Length: 107
Image 1 (cartoon, rainbow, N blue to C red):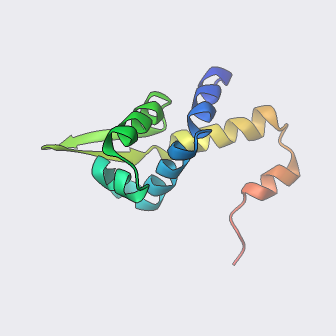
Image 2: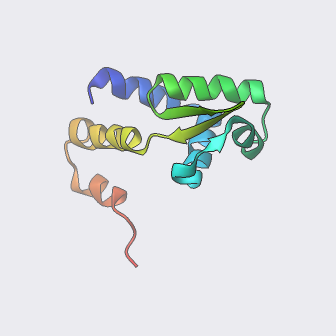
């Protein structure tokens, strides 16, 4: 990932509504959510939700698939991971403390 793509993705994630959408789509996993389900999950209007989904899609963080009359949205997990990886490697100098914060919790 280059710096321009990282800035675009981070700008998309820096909005409270879009961050809520990312959380909802992350919880849905590979199944994804319809636009209506995303709007319901964030207690927002469908038009506002569509606006934010479009911003996330333009940043390369969300993909969509039309199924009849509905559109299902899915978080692009590899793209989101690339943003984190870019930050760790290029912005944080591979700092061990920051890397530890990104490690999965121990059981």
